[in-house]
Image 1 (cartoon, rainbow, N blue to C red):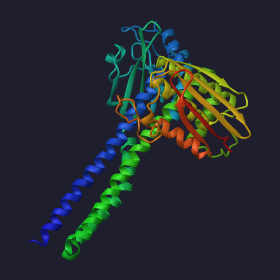
Image 2: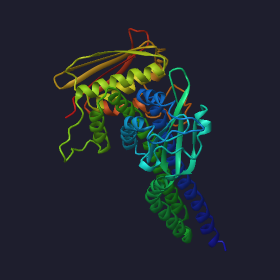
Image 3: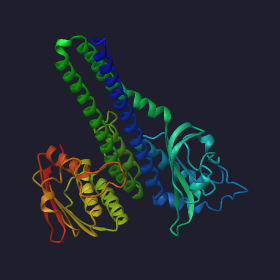
Image 4: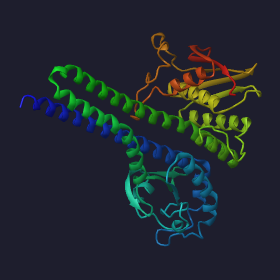
Length: 413
């Protein structure tokens, strides 16, 4: 009995720990997906083209006499390409825009356009947001619904973004497949260890090492999902800027570039031009900082080659200033001898000297994590982009009274 008891205890402990690890992995994937659909829905609801188009069809139907596909055909022609573009970039199953009675203007299926949404819409059209799992015409999906408001605050429609529960389950199963070998291996090692009393201590340490590896793998996966959400937020603003400027082809080229992890396109489609990407990034940063109550000034030398790395650095540094409480931000970029140099100044509260040495560390932040998705990602991304291009970045006091970030790095090859 004494020989069997250690095996039973070891197996029970390892099984419980494995179950918790697998559960946390699944929960992390689901949380990241929820964050993604909410971000996409909110960004689309704020898009100027969406608000203006929905305002134009508020009189197309009434609660007693709903608009149909013909009544909304012009609005569909305007918004369906945007919905498909954003849906492809975000990796979501559907992007639906409705009028103020909940009648679909956009939908992946033509047959569903001009049909009223059958799931939760009354509360959203009354001005409330929604996040949850529902079963609709596309099946069971995790969806976010956000009201669209006109300039005077009136609700003129809503945006619904969803990911099929089957796709979430498939992603979870793929992640679990990577963890299961560790779990099974730990169970086997634990069983064998407890069978040999002379090696009990050594075998148990090996089990603990295996569990530590599992937890580290889970931590890295969760951190990667948060980082992807952060980078997607930045790239969605760039897409927003390109679409707002009336450059849908440039937006498509940019999406193709980032979705294929910047591998060359076999069909010869070029990346979006540096000038277009620069203008879109400027537009996106200005819009985001205005939402934070700040204004940004740009002094960009025309020879600076804009690419995704430059956009990441500039966007995150300016966003960091706005989130820190600055109301004035100034960004300067120059290029010479194959190097890009820049600085971002703000009039915010500045950085404590004790925090300056840790500000680029992953996970470090002086701001509260009100959203619950993790902070300390943006400046770590900036540091890694700059160092990957043989560059440096420094932080100090700004002439504007706040913080100055100064960086230089090589032009992308």
